[in-house]
Length: 467
Ligand SMILES: Cc1cc2nc3c(=O)[nH]c(=O)nc-3n(C[C@H](O)[C@H](O)[C@H](O)COP(=O)(O)OP(=O)(O)OC[C@H]3O[C@@H](n4cnc5c(N)ncnc54)[C@H](O)[C@@H]3O)c2cc1C
Image 1 (cartoon, rainbow, N blue to C red):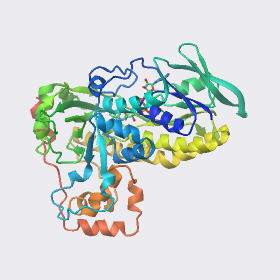
Image 2: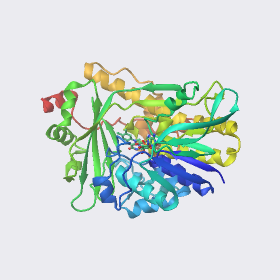
Image 3: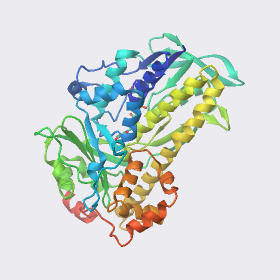
Image 4: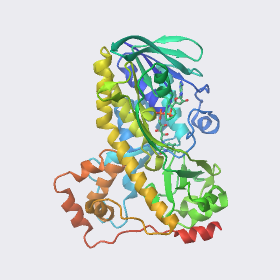
């Protein structure tokens, strides 16, 4: 049995801690925010103070791969979430009406996820963790402790000093301190080399409003969760207990569209989208909640084949965080935690092997999702920029097969399921496109079919609405 300290008690930190505790380790979680875990999902939504998580009340969607991972590794979390009002949501319910073959197929259950507002997901994870683990709330990691190096000139972490001044020794420290993790600063203080960092802020602003159904069931979702229009996009996500969220997101350069922060303007624009307007038919439970300044960032702690530090590894947002338009952060973090648990299970007695293997696992399982997400966000930013500047968007660099898939999925049941594999984070686009014969099948399914453009206001219409 080893002693492990997990710094940060968000969704990924607590899930990571539970996975490690199941391996028989003595795990302590330190969470800077002092607020106790609420006694009910309603209290979590209404009153839980989580200053450490800026996006705590923003729209969140857990992909089916995240649910499947929880089912496999922490089934008690999914059960608690369902008991707390989580909604079993089948992405196949979004199958376009043009698809004639609507028969179920083997394996369809993999597209069912559980949806809930973020505070309710966090409530389910924290309630479950609190039953099994030592979670100290209101205690921050203030500093890293070090001991004799295991690799020449590379600091070796042997524990943490808390904000209370207590020293906690650990065989491994996990950094789950989120997108604003102080790890790079802690390492600088130890004289370590800086991490290799990739970061950019694509400058999206998100304006979110939550609704609740007076009848207890949310309205049917007609489109997928993400729909793009000229110069704005809509994210429409089912929640828990009859709630759902509608988010309009725009570029922060787009001064005119910042009027969307006002409820009446926001409502007028959503109402002008025929496939989404019915999502306004509910009891609004919030005003418009804005968020911006969300960078995509990836930090790598093995550089030129050598770790910058041993005895500590990052998981979740502290390693990499992305823009939320594709809603991948929690699922990426859970995938990363599961991989980290495997690596810890094998290498806890060898800090160098653990650091290198953790990096290899991260590069294999998480980095490709990060890169794919950033690529899609950049392409979207270019489209929005073109729309703001009144010029046609530059042709995207999508392959003919990728373009054809967007049409084929509207008419072909198999192609729609293939899209869901990507959306649900079971397979990266490049994995799908590399399947033997896939390209030919997509092109055949799309042949002679019309590209579907979701009906909605043009930029000129939006500007008129907002004027
Ligand atoms: C606007 C927005 C919308 C999003 N929507 C989605 C979505 O739809 N689907 C999705 O999957 N993901 C979404 N995400 C991403 C998702 O929120 C993150 O991926 C997820 O929160 C990462 O969890 P985490 O546990 O790694 O970090 P966090 O949730 O950030 O938790 C980090 C924790 O560390 C604590 N902490 C910080 N410093 C210290 C310290 N020194 N000592 C101790 N504790 C500390 C903090 O208080 C916090 O509790 C969204 C993100 C944003 C910004």
